[in-house]
Image (cartoon, rainbow, N blue to C red; front, side):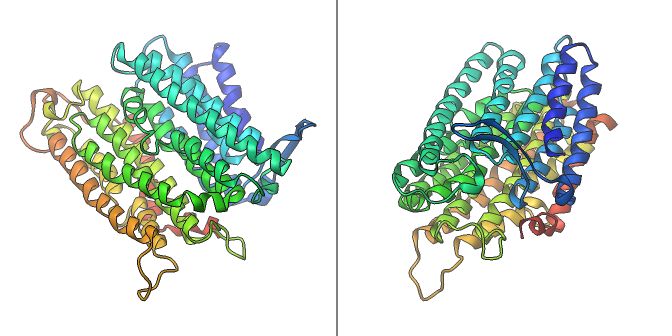
Amino acid sequence: MLLALIILPLLAAVAIFFGSPARLTTLAAAVINLVLGVFAVACPDFAGTFSILVLADPAIHLSLGLDGMSSVMLLLSVIVTLAATLSGTCPEGKEKLWFSSILLIAAGAIGAFISTDLFFFSAFHELALIPTFLMMGILGRGGNDRVAIAWKATVYLAFGSIVLLAGLLLAATQLDSFAFSDLKAVGEHQNAIALLLIIGFGTLVSLFPLHSWAAPAYASAPAPIAMLHAGVLKKFGLYGLLRVGLAVAPEGMQHWLNLLLVLLLGNIIWVGFVTINQKNLSTMLGNSSVMHMGYIFLAIAAAIGTGGVIFTADGALTLAASAAVLLMFAHGISIALSFSLADRIESKTGTLELNKLGGLAKTAPKLAFLFGLAGMASIGLPGLANFAGEIMVFFSGFQGWTPDQPLGPVQITTMIAIWGVVMSAVYMLRAFRQTFQGPLEAKCENATDLTILEKAPAALLALVLLAVGLYPNLLLNLLK
């Protein structure tokens, strides 16, 4: 079953190339993958594992498996894939490129998250990046600028991938294995490996100051690509630090902890101020995504600060690791919802410039409600999934600390990071007010509300935010 989750979108992409109806084929593959993914998570014994030897020396296996962490990321992937398939407006005559790209990104993301071999873990991620670059450069917004933006993203992500590959190979040669089951603390060069992994994974996640590619890329990308990359593929780096970095170089990660704390504050505070200053809704959302990566890095830093252990004695994830995984899922759903609705705003008004929008709630109340819900999730409103993840991150920053002890670097960083919640409220509430409230601007006078088909992806993502927000144990039980 696990192999089918990767093969199905690949076969659908090939079928589209040979003339199969693009939209219908992609929708069918996305729906089937959602059903298969949910079933695999609900019945892991039935889903089983898969492994086949690809290369004997060194031993490289195409091996797939699920545990709590990969199960949550699989659910994120299949949910956002279906929503992305239903979002955006494909340019006439570009259906093959548009829908096959969605399928290839989905296959790469799912493959990366359920792989249990370092080689394919990295290879599947690279598979997903290729159609991402093509879609940004060919079908992205921004005229001629989209090509430069796509190249900038390509250079940054290629740099991150090369640095990451160097770190993975340096660790794998010491372990004499690429299998996740053989991951353990290496004996030499832990500091170098940890730094390579922080830079490599960090660039892919837009860790400050290697973040400047992300917001322009998301702002110019077609809606489904922004949803899949910001919502799903970007979590590869965070997942990798948890899954690989802390396993192979725990002492090295501890050595660079203070550096990581400074950089993640750059994401939260510096990029937070940049986000407040944005005048375009799409670039604001892109920067807000970069900002919120800082919270997940804070959970990883909290795990490092407590010894780099992410599994308890009974095999469950620790508080810090659970917080990181839950917030990865919540952010992926909420940012995908935001980008999907921003695309609808642009299609109905012709602009995403905040000073040209206003009063849209008068003509599109359903759109206003759903965008408001996405905004409240981003802020961390109780009852929505992001709140559960963020509050767990802040608690994890103080895990093991008692009032009779002096504040450590992680606790001080956590206290500063809490101010990011205020900054999120400032830019998100202001954007909602400028877009949907106030006098009805000329651009919004003839705007129509969401149709049933346009509401479908938003409703799916909104229901997931509510379900996990009201009952976080839907996911947390998977991590035990």
